[in-house]
Length: 379
Ligand SMILES: *Cc1c(COP(=O)(O)O)cnc(C)c1O
Image 1 (cartoon, protein in one colour):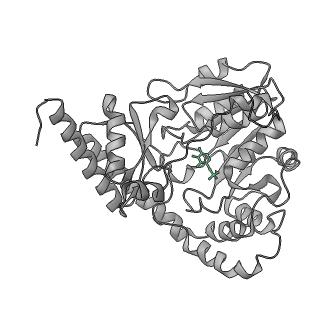
Image 2: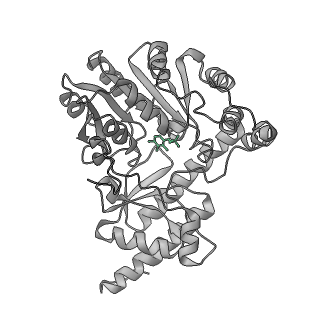
Image 3: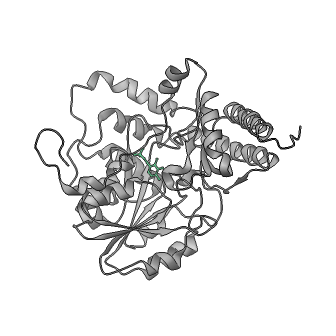
């Protein structure tokens, strides 16, 4: 296709579907002309950033004339301490999103295949398409659980990467530690398992693993983590990967020198030691999850049990209408059609007050819809 200036772009770019972010607050505020808008659409931390991180950013503002540390040494050492790993097993990146691109650039040749459970995080496919690799979708089962058999069956001699997002975005389901061991022991040694545990802090079940112990045990796995979710730093863009040193060294070859900016480095270094903020965030999320479960059940709505900071809710054929109406009421959530599940909305868990506003809005909207369709309204 011509882009109007006669310069041909690479063919593989035709396969890239632009990322659809959650609607930003300001956009909805402008469109509706209202101030009170709540965003439960991008799994952000509703408590705000770690206060220690904010303080750290303040303290370095007048050093912004200097380039950041290209190795992110302080941040790496803070993460290494926190996770009991070695700094050599770490790479810090401009969000976990950048890491996904870097992994793709490091390991994918044209024609290689990646295995991605479906539905899952869209950036995995972006990285593959960028490199001209092929995306093999393996559907989750009817309860949105991972199907190990289907994943293993999908492996061919071209498979390079297997992505597992656990807890999975957008379903909130996870791969238990036992089944992760089974997967790692079953895949050929030429395949890297990319284990995205961006939401690991929210997983409260005992049989959950964030994957780090398998890095320590020397398996071909890279664990992805981010400062965007529990630490509340989505706006400064910082994430990291944990893997054995040789995998990390390979990825560092394609990394730009100053990929993580100074503000992000300072903020993340402070945030990872801010236990108070982390515990409070976990607490607010766990109780918010229960609050929403209860309210959804009372409305007779089906939802997927979540180990994360969002819940996938089945609104049946009303999903589109509920989504639109919520927006008009100043509540932004995510519609499932981008993941091929148009009957579902993904709702991020907010503060207690935000959750209440959401619940009230959902109740009102469903009542109106029932009235409109002439069904009996239960008060
Ligand atoms: C939010 C998210 C990330 C991290 O994104 P950043 O680029 O670090 O903001 C990674 N994986 C999944 C599944 C996510 O939902």
